[in-house]
Length: 339
Image (cartoon, rainbow, N blue to C red):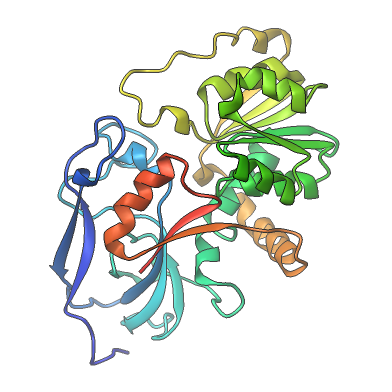
């Protein structure tokens, strides 16, 4: 099924050059391109909202990683939700809303099997890129599977006002944590943590992280959900109790570094404390955890037990700046670009 009034061109964001240190607007280029005819099995989607995420910074470097690097003079990609304008796939209807991986563009042509239907009448389209999407699944699997959190554990979350961290804290509380504390980058974000049910929080700009963590969790912690790395990881190792666990999700403090960072200076403490430091990417757990996550998160949302925040920028042309601002901590909750 097709629609006769279809666009012939679209706009997309290309990687113009590889950033050295912090990205700048000159590293991106807004390009108008022709849309191809649909092949059998493909769909044309008008994107309504797209995601910018910290992991994308690593893909801008030409290095081997768990996902391929972005290519120069080619469109970037990432999570997006949109409306199907035309379909040559029997199971994807025109007019339906779908989640897919071809963001950073106003229209996407993709295999219909790569478009997952979403119910935008029940939840706003942006929710499927945040609380019900990759950040939510990452928070859930990272805390409960990679971090092996158990009822009664004390949990510390860095980057706690972000898309993932804000959900980690709430999931920890709903899963029976004895204490949940977090760090954030502004007083307003710290205040927001307590509105979300954290027992305490601190602004990491206010002094050494180790000292501030000791104040909000004087009896120590059992699980550290790491979105930041660096000084935060070192502080957490100090505060972790015997058999403590670290779920290493991100290291945003060093994404723009031009020199390799030093390892935590107190890493030897992991021996006597019998610590587990487990790096993870959501692809490892996604299929295992997704059905349980969707059921439990859907119930929590329906009952009003989970809150989520969004920081929204308007227009594809503003996507590069939204990404730059994300890396500088300008967001509370999920950073989205509405198209």
